Length: 85
Image (cartoon, helix red, strand yellow):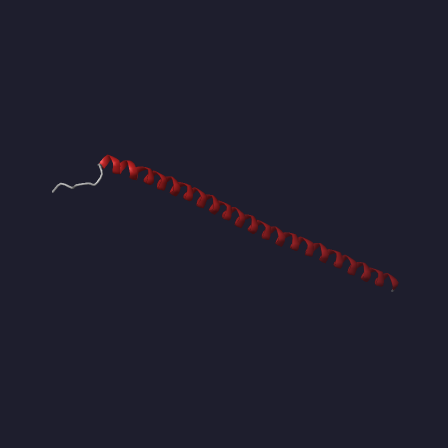
């Protein structure tokens, strides 16, 4: 019932252990890189959303200012026409 190994168990462990440790280190580095990329993607998405909101606000503000200028000009034209009568 005993198992017979080609090599001594210590020799097998010494061969496998560095591979296992390297695999764990590689996995940890990959997870770290993936986490960093996910954080960057989230940051860029937030920046894009904020830029879109800012563009909408600025467009609305510009349109209100333009409408106010047009309204002011119309009032001046109507006031000038009334003064001529």
